[in-house]
Image 1 (spheres, helix red, strand yellow):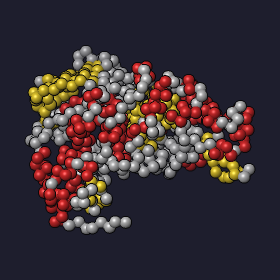
Image 2 (tube, one colour):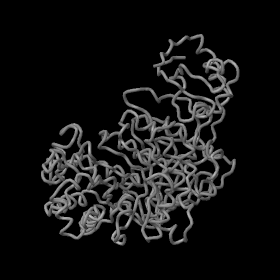
Image 3 (tube, helix red, strand yellow):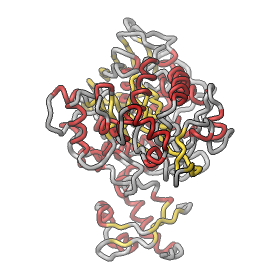
Image 4 (cartoon, rainbow, N blue to C red):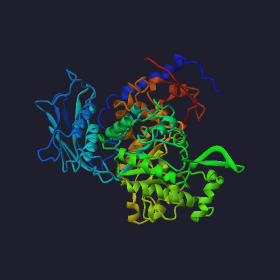
Length: 592
């Protein structure tokens, strides 16, 4: 184990000196570098219009189908006012509509869908024009307005004196893919509700629109069921502190809706169900060894009628709690060894004519669960494993491709079968690797497979996956952002306009600073991510955090120079992040 040496202030001096030089250099670069994700059509000029928070107002157009009183948009106006003018504090602590407006943002919708939930057909298209004294934001739905408000907030910038400006701009924009998701795993490590809500905020800034909630799995069952309370009482890490109550679930769904985000629940079975059996007897398959029960349990028992009776009752509740028209049924990584060991399961297979074909047994189980959810008017999503062993593929609707290797080969195969596809394989952000390597998630081409246009239209989108083996609330945000934003642009923007990593980098750099200002990375118990000078830090260290709070020890370049030597000789060496191997990092609180 390498021993880290003590920090010597003389050694730190070159780093601090170089950093101060960078701050001076970058201090004047205040103008907006671009919008993230990149709109499909954007034109802007150097014509600059001042914004004053005291005389700025959001308003509804005269012919808008949505008018004042729309709680969703009224709340969005208040939220985006604070994002646009982060330094502004009203005298009485309350935001008020200005009596005499020097600049107004008028919104107009074609439909009044203010009380609805976003769905798979919701239009997010919007047009935004910014001119002298006003801006107009037009969309078919409130969901398009939310996306346009996010874009407008990114167009506003401050000069060195803190004054706000926006340039003349015209934008026509819409998402390339309808499904743009982020998966959080709340079973392997419990994530507090506030961490989920903060993730939803960050998702809205990147224009993600689906929160895939992998809510239960083998390690724990935190969902508190009304019908089967023993599931969380016995299956959660703690029956009181590490659960999601019905109120918690409603809060997450409501919070997501206000940001135009759908909540897609996943209750994975028949595998990944170890926590289910603790609160529901006779649900899991008893494993046998030497002709007798071993005392261990495997996947859900597909041979018992009581299994399907339980699942029918359970999914009836789930489909009433989660309003989205989709539900994820999982179906991946089923270990057949326990089924194979159980004589009752084998007898059932002989009775059904399956012989020793265990994939057929799993297909039988999944078809029953799909039928149960279909009876509750839900469209099922399954992992690609189900497609691989399913002979009657017409019973499936949406397949999520997650395995590595030639994942586009699988996308082609699934679409050739006439099924819709969600792509996840290239966006597993929990996997080991450098957190600064965002480009690998950006240079993904979801439709780069040989196939017809009809096939390619069946690719409805993709999602970023953050599995919880090594992730909890302490490291969730720096692992997700801004790397997830790279996938967000790939799923939203035109591929031809966003094929260059070099051209994207300044915009992502600028966007990361916005995330910092929006406190996406901040921790209420720590100042670790606060008060960073974003531009130069991200330029030098990509997704590493505030440089003033880091002292790198035991760092060597591939040329054999220490970081201290590099700081003394040429600070530009930092620009080539590939030259470095970071051996260890010690975090300190450093005051300059």
